Structure formats: structure tokens, C-alpha cells
Amino acid sequence: MLKKIVCLLFAFSFITVNGEKGKVYLIPGSDTSVNPYGGMNIYDGRLWSAALYADPNQYGHKVMNPAFREQYRDSYGTPLKMTWWMMAGNVFHLSRNCNVPVRNSMTLYLMKKYHLDAIEAFDDQLTLHYHNYYWSDTNGDGIYWWNQGMDFLLNLEDYEETLCK
Image 1 (cartoon, rainbow, N blue to C red):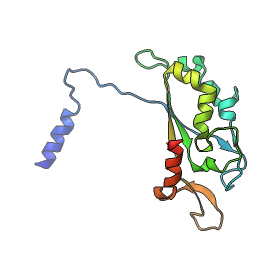
Image 2 (image 1 turned 180 degrees about the vertical axis):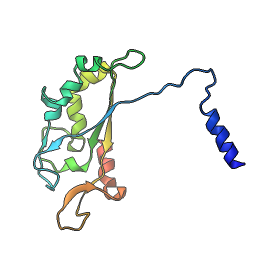
Image 3 (image 1 turned 30 degrees about the vertical axis):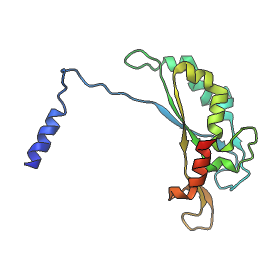
Image 4 (image 1 turned 90 degrees about the vertical axis):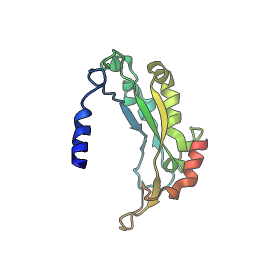
């Protein structure tokens, strides 16, 4: 009996109420960060490059160029809109970048500084995306890196601090 019900539900899932075809909505997005000079194996004192946002030859400026956006339109004719998930968290806290107000949310600050006008003009969405980095030696080889924490509670204090600032 259960098998028949599942088959009927499956068959009815292809029928729409008004007979129209369904619509599919895609939300292009970018999980965006910055690159550290020296790599992820430096505990503190790293300097993060702002070039992705600040340099006109980098992708930040290219994606914000209206000519780039006009190439990609949805079925309503609207140019490409993006959702920007800006990486945030403790991996930036110990950096040497003192030219940003709050290091934990460095990427959000840089995106707003260099591209807020374009974000508003294109009606893009902008938000934080917290990474649960934890300074650890996950494979036990004696080499420490910034790895994704295996337990969110490892960084709960940092998470709350990042979101509150």
C-alpha cells in the first residue's frame, strides 16, 4: 500500500494546478574571502590582501562591471544579480591589517568600501558567512593550520563577537 501511495505522489508531482510549466529560480552567489600572504599555516601576524576588492584588474571589479552583468539575464530580462556571502571570523582577528575597523569582518568592510554603490545599483544581496576556523593539527602530523573546527562551540565567543560588531 505504501508503495502505491509513493507512486501516486510521484506521478502527481509532475502535474501543476494551472497546467503551466514550473519555474526554476537560480541564485548566483559567491562565498568571498581574501587571500593571505604566506598561507594558512601562520597563526597570527598574517597580512591579508585586499586586491580582490581594491584592484580594478581583479574579479571584484570585473563582476561589478555593468557590461559583464548585461551578458547574463534571467527569463524576465533582468541582468545578473548576485548574493555575496562575505567570509568572517577569527581567522582574520590576529591579522596585521589595521586599516579596517573590525578585522573579524574584514571582507564585508572591503566589499562595502569598494563596491557598495554597485551592489545597491544591481540590487545584489550582501551578508556575512562565518567560517569556524580553529588553529589545530587535525591529522596529528605536528603541523598546525587554520582548519575548519570540528565543533562549533570552539569558536562560539568569536562568532558572537563577530556578529555583534
